[in-house]
Length: 157
Picture 1 (cartoon, rainbow, N blue to C red):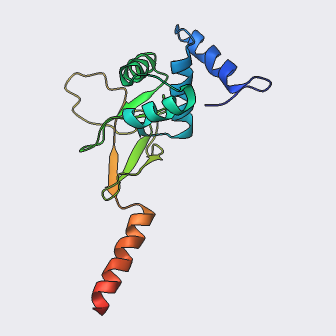
Picture 2: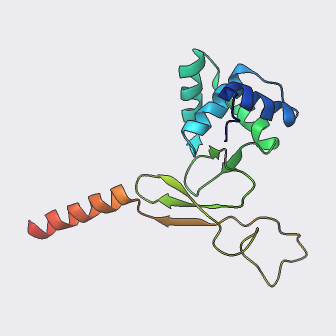
Picture 3: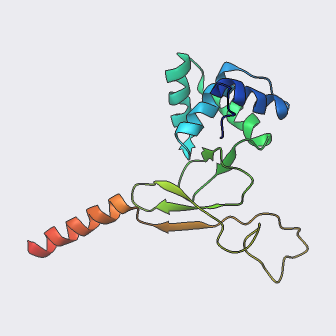
């Protein structure tokens, strides 16, 4: 999220919320700030971050905020296989994700082929396709290094 020159982050986020027909509330501002600082966070992590900022907010309130922000297309919900839903502020560009099989770390991967939906199918069964979701799986640099070190140690034992 880009902060407009001359405005505080809360004022800018407030303007974005209002532009999408949402009231500006402290929980919404806290959730947006949490996702700005920690993209791909799950709801529990977002709730913990919001509580750190607000002092108190129920988990249900955080879920309600995430739902409202997702419905308003201000937040994107992703659901990697075997993982709880994750949330991010990067919306509208049809990017993809890479997920570490070991630790679950997630990173963005820009669309690699053309414009949205980035992938084309010959048989779309009559659907009007506007988005393609691709998840790449592998090991993040930290887990890959750790695995290499473990294998080297095992080779020497």
